[in-house]
Length: 372
Image (cartoon, rainbow, N blue to C red; front, top):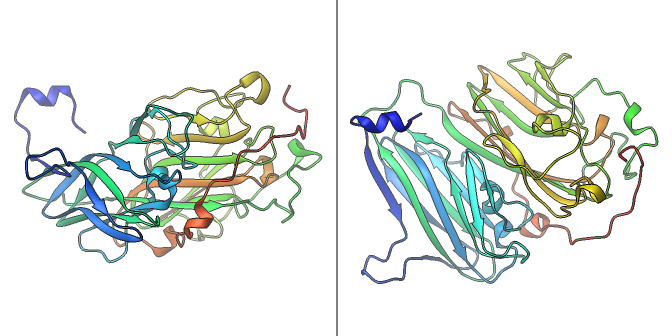
């Protein structure tokens, strides 16, 4: 970690950049990717660390933020350590463009009301590599795109003795099944349910190896209205009986008290953005009518000041509603560092384009009166 004080003396690296600038000296500063094809925007063989990625994408497709994938590969690995829709990776979910800022990401947009509006995407997460790094964009649209980008990185003479590489995975469950496997959106006795397992929770991360859990961008489409949260976060660390399906013997090492509590809010979510937590966007921005929870919601939590390390494995999950009583549409981009090789179990098979598309807006009916 570098601070302003570090600028008072020499720094132990060379500043480098790969960008889409027009090498002819003109103003054609974009990089084209044809329809249904993939291209690298960054490919170096060196010891280094990416410190900043800026990107803007020109396209007529209103759902490009979910149709274009970003993948990252470290040190010659064959399977990516990062794979996600480009919008969800940068903190803009539901294929919507909006302004937000955190310690890890920032975005700016002119017209937040228009689906598919152009948006400036920034990532500030350090991404070290020991001998090589490659960033690939996969255009799964039926038309070509123009990409403007910077990748700012540092070149070092020596790699650290212990190197944790950056990882990000994406998943969506649309919708999540209730605990009873049904489609009823709410139990009649919603707040009276009991849950003493993480088996049926929404799984955000399962990783094997040694590393640090960084956090999430979580995207919920509240299908039924009312409060989508109240689900407890549960984190199992270094358990011998931990699997992808279940964290292990009860209780977890970290057990929360509700979705908004894990996100460092209370009494629902508020339109507030902090370095480490916040609500970056909500479709129905009227707290008195909808408690900021109807329709589509984007929230985030990053464990920087409160790091969560693991030595052997980790399983991070959250109830979808109290005791898993809701069946909304959840998508999540999860971020972490770890030693290589990473387990293939940390990644879900990427959904085809049509299954990544957001649901259309809808009118919501009241289902309960437990929130006044």
